[in-house]
Image (cartoon, rainbow, N blue to C red; front, side):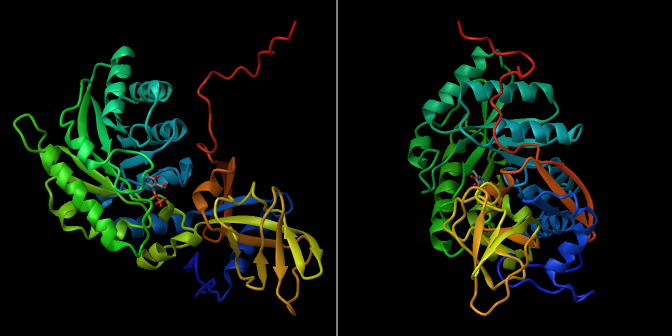
Amino acid sequence: MGFYPTASGPAKVAPMTGQRLSEVLDGALAPCLDQLLTPALVIDLDAVQANIAATIARVGGEDRWRPHLKTSKQAVIIDLMLDAGLRHFKVATCDELGLLLRTAGSRAVDVLFCYPAQRASLTAVLALARAHAHARVLVLADSPAHLDAIAAWSRALGHTSPLPVMLDVDLGMHRTGSIPAEWRERPSVPEPLVLAGLHGYDGHLTWAQREQAQLGYDALVELATALCSGPAAPAPSTLELVTSGTHSYAHALDHPGLRAGAWRHSVSPGTIVLSDRRSHAAERDIGLRQAAFVATRVISAGPDRVTLDAGSKAIAPDVSPPSCAIVDHGELEPQRASEEHLPCRVQPGAASPELGRLLWLIPEHVCTTVNLYREAVWIRGGRYVGVGPVGASGHGCGLPDTSLVKPPREG
Ligand SMILES: Cc1ncc(COP(=O)(O)O)c(C=O)c1O
């Protein structure tokens, strides 16, 4: 589509056709509307591609971006990233790791499993790494004790080849990782682990908290410098410092110590690929296009109220209401959703959309919304082009599928 709809402001008009965004989206899905069940996740692949290219340009090259795949979770989007030259990724689940490795095929990727692995998930990670030996798979240590545990589990699992590890540094988010002082006391890592870098994710900070972000990066750089001093210390050029998501990458890109060191510095925004209502600062900074929508229909209408078929099982409710905006319908105010229903107040004097009318939602939080879907509908060039799986949505348990075996009866 030849225009830049925004997640935050009112939708812009397509310059070539003068159409509103909702009209363009309606037109794209017109051929399949009779069969399309709503709510449906709809991905504009042109917008995804534009966001990937714009982000690579903003961060200064493919090697400086290690996108987190927890947002997109789809092979078609991973393929677009690989086509754009990206080779470094982050994942949080074994499903995301498996999807990346399968999608990359013979393309050698470098992927950080950026979640504190426990014995079962480490077993799955190592099995995937063995099955895709040309990929570099890194693990994350939460604390010195966890570092020792990963090393011991790896040895017990028969993994003796070097396993790259990043130390998770708590820069103030207080979610995972250990503070720099704790890591300073553990300068070496046990075999088969090899120190590959530091991971400092500052998801607690916003676009406005530049000074606080820079203090965190100062601490990360000091720790990296300390770990690289001493006779048996790793050379700084062998390390990578990974920081920042969509709400703070701009602070990290400007930090002189991160930029100037001999280490490689990368940022790891994920939301940026699809964009959402919360990413308005990055959207303005990079010129992001909204790439993910939820198609919904009006299923009930009352006085000053319409209800859409997009409840909390269609738009993630992990933000305070409203959890979405309705494209080109400022007169409709989304209220608190129930599981399958989204009631919307109609502003006084405004006309209500008719029953069955297709509307378009932009999620406040796209990552958790995508995770609710098994399939996504793709549009390209303003046209419907297909449907594909959201291959890493939800959670698998890792055990073999026994659905063809009847569970034993009691007694
Ligand atoms: C460890 C880690 N890295 C990177 C990201 C990416 O952040 P965003 O989706 O805001 O770009 C997240 C988001 O939750 C995260 O938890």
